[in-house]
Length: 280
Image (cartoon, rainbow, N blue to C red; front, side, top):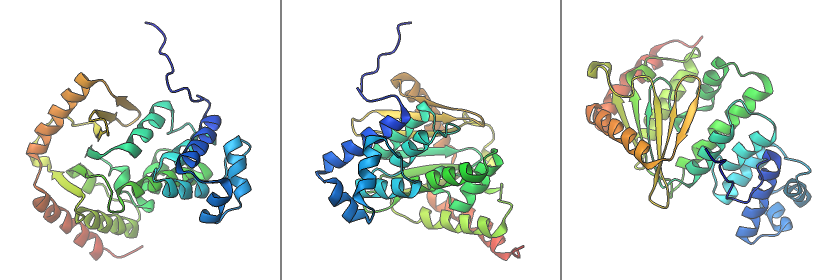
């Protein structure tokens, strides 16, 4: 098989790529370093050093730049790569993050864990800690995951549909208060016009995605990419035939799921039960 050609012309080094992306976005916006510093409240020389690759700044700076440029989660993900954290943001996930930031609509199936776009910081922290992360690395990953949630904020948020296996709702957090906060956030998000939440109850039996979480991204060019994730690895799928096969499986499962109204009524008792439990 011939070696795959790199066609973007951009650096494959994470630190250099981060610097290149920062400069590209600023030039595209038509702002000087000084104007950028004045707008965001940091010394403009910091941004100059970041664009030269002399420093990568902090995750807070990356988050602020994501918000300013309208690239929710993208620069924070590139920052993670530049910082040398490869436990989650590897090359294929970096590509996924780029596509997610550009998506005009998204639809998802959660087999056991809530989608990252709907996770509270407390939920994200417990899930990531269960995967073995701790200390500064855990803090960075929580910031990166919750930073992506900004994608669903604002009037221009892309439509997002998620189908939750009942197992997601029956797997609470160890911290009762964090679990209540997460369930309340889930209900609040489900009431948004741009978010559709459905529940796939255990009673439907076996289905085509019984052990696989799946995200579809509709891109501005009309094509669709899929990200398939199991307990220990993820796979970005962009080949049309494979994406179409997965879409057919997803459509069949969506037909088995409860309607959005029925799903909300299914979720509410979990919130009521959690609210009745005393805090520890």
